[in-house]
Amino acid sequence: MSVEAGQKHEVVLVEDLKRTQIVQYAGASGDYNPLHTDEVFATKVAGYPTVFAHGMLTMGMTGRALTDLVGTAGLTRFGGRFTSQVWPGDTLTARITVESVADGIAELTVSTVNQDGVEVFSGTAAARV
Amino acid sequence: MAAERFPIEWGHILMFARAVGDPNPVYEDPERAVAPPTFTMASAQFDPDYFLRPKIGKPWFGSGKEPTGISRESSGTGGGGGGGGTGLHAEQHFEYHKPLRPGMVLTATQKPGRSWEKEGKRAGKLVFNEGITEYRDESGELVVTARMVGVRTEKVVGS
Image (cartoon, rainbow over all chains, first blue to last red; front, side, top):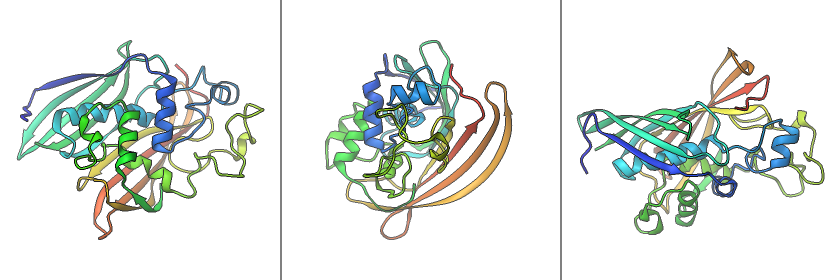
């Protein structure tokens, strides 16, 4: 697979995020914080408008866009900030840019945005290519 | 997430890949599956003290008959992120030292990182805490280093 500087890769990660997928992530990851899956707790105790996705669900979905591009065993680094919350019903798109390729290592930037164009995750990654 | 024994299992990888909506067929093949990039978060399942998992016979802060099972003050004080109400995950960073495959058994050890404060526009005072988790294989070699930044806010942030 060839990865070149300047290359861009865009993936729709999820359309109309379902509460059930958030439950699925809680079960797989072991993060059962009721903020993410318990509407009564999230609204009545924590004061949020509804439940919201784990940041790590957003980052996990974003990781899929990276491995689509560089393969499942190539990443050397992946990190970023959760810049806005992700709610049930959101549609998320990851946009990856290959900033440089040198000595077999690609440096990438990644931005995941919601249906309104608001960035929900902003990060960087590096991969052997 | 500290764990003395975090076994990397193909079925767990498959469930995790499904949960993050990754259709890559590699995860369906026990011979070829490699853990997805954020999979080490699932070591929470193997941390006996992980505070965001209900424990058998112990109070739990999620709703039951009442909106919360226990008082707010005693919930969600550990770890870097999550928490009961105002704790949020701000940043997460992974360094990958070698691929993570089914059959490997890791240990996860945690060390505290930096701590700092900032005045937020929407949420009042923000207190950031960093935690570093090192995942090592059976020979003691580093497989993944994870750095989490959690933030606690004075006010609820909802957009």
